[in-house]
Length: 349
Image 1 (cartoon, rainbow, N blue to C red):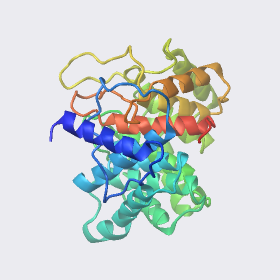
Image 2 (tube, one colour):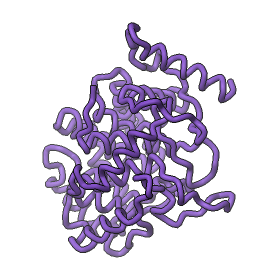
Image 3 (tube, helix red, strand yellow):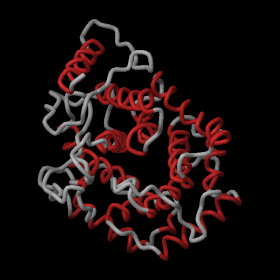
């Protein structure tokens, strides 16, 4: 089935779910429709819609789960961060959450994790999801968090995926920052457990010996420090905030390529001029976590960009930093856009 046909089918499904007078059938594994490719040419939505964002998130996460039967940082793991920002009361949310729990309870004991990175990423997603839903640490999430320390390296870091798919799957520093976020966000004072205290001592040692290679990585530390303040000195925290604010585009958004110096696989230049969903959502969300008020002028401009640049499918487009294939970073960009809007208390219907 070609891209145009998939997009037409998805658009028809979205219309059926949102047309006046028609009952919306929740997206599930049984009725999920491929949301189509992430294209820069997709038209903008006529108006911002939480419902369309939810439909896209549900469809992208479940399609990935159904077709590929795996978890990735940019799609279904990011989904578990973001979906409660709209509502966790959705069949898709329950199905994605159940799939993550099954990894911890069944796959890992029987076959082991695919990679060390899977342990950290799944634990972070489950802990974040717990915080955003019940506010209690689920036993399966605790099991996943405790397993983080079994894959921690002697230097305190983690053997992360190095697929040359920045910013998430390209170097070890991202994994160390994400592990710190997982510990910090986990409810029920998990950070105070003996295992977490010992593991975090190793992470602190790793971060001290390995400075963040890009501003994106520094922003990850700013996020982690919102839970564990001593991970970033006050001066470094303010310097990071100032640097992020200085990179805001005239249109109110941010461009992901300006947060690092990544090289594309085809050696073509990165797009540092156009704002995108990932960078704008990520920066606005982390600025809010760092204590920048929702009323701050830069934050308000970022929110305006997000509300004005949603696509018809409900997603926010972001060009891949690696190569122009499917731009899966748009899935994470959509998740961060929702997280940012929720963090700014944008009203929902």
